[in-house]
Image (cartoon, rainbow, N blue to C red; front, side, top):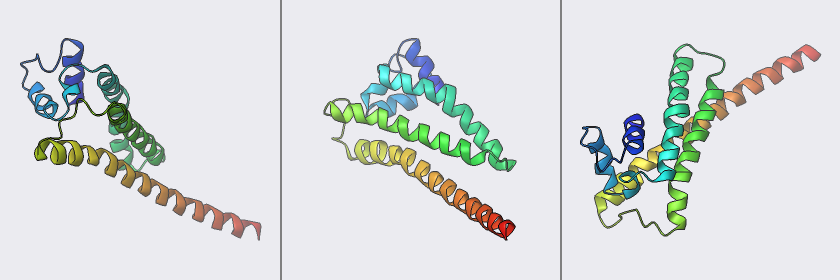
Amino acid sequence: MEGPFVYFSLTGSVNNSNHILAEVWKEYGKADSRWLFSDPTIVSLEILTVVITGPLALLLIYAIICDKHYRHFVQITLCACELYGGWMTFCPEWLTGSPSLDTSSLLYLWCYLVFFNSLWVVIPFLLLWHSWKEMEVVHTSVSTTNRKKKR
């Protein structure tokens, strides 16, 4: 979904597009107007999403399915990218008094802004926790093996 958003934003704006995929962004734009008018911060972050985190997500899927050794490195990197993107999406807005956010509607505030954006925070934290626990298991296993070798 971010690919079309970037295209619409670089060739005009989501608000001026008649494409069916622009309708999703127009709906979200009712809660956060920055998505309608090609806000440079949002477009910049979405370019990174399309170019870096999209391919990283595909690589992570492959690494999980094929049980690759680099799975947790990619998972941690992807989670850090998502958390950074979320922070950079909302922190500047909060620092300026949230002029682009419409919190007057319960739907916009609790569904669009809180729930949907919370997914981009909760899921990366859960995946980071999972990677942490997996690294802990590996470290404990290696430490135990090394102690046995020293005896």
